[in-house]
Length: 134
Image 1 (cartoon, helix red, strand yellow):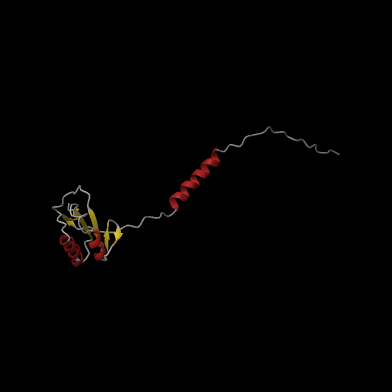
Image 2 (cartoon, one colour):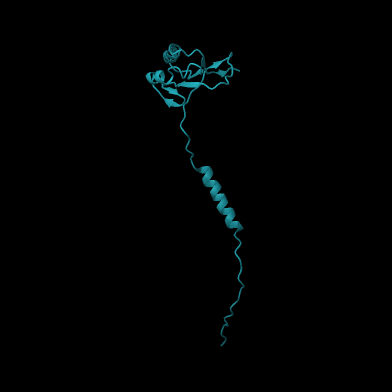
C-alpha cells in the first residue's frame, strides 16, 4: 500500500502587486464623480433684450434686476420699491450710475416705476442692460 506523502511547498513571502487595485479604485472614483449630481447656486435668471446700439459700461454700478415675474433685486438681494428708495437715497447714490437688468418679458410698468424712482432720487446716469444684436 502506497501512502501519499504530503509535501509542503514553502513559498517565500511574496508581495502583492497593488497597482491593479489602485487602478480599479481610481476608475470607481471617476465613475462616481461623473455620475453624481451637482448642486448649483441659485441665481437670477434674466434674458436680456437685444440692441444694436449697446455700449460696454466699465464703471461700478448699482445693479437693479427685474425678472420675468417682476421680482426686483438690488445687487442680488430681493427688494421692494420702498426699500429700493431707502437704499438709493442721497447722498450715497447720486454719483454712482445705476444699471437696470430687466428680463425681456418683465412688465414695462415695473421698469418705468424703477426708472421713475431713480430719477426722483436724483440719479442721472441710468442704464439699461442689453445683449448686442448680431
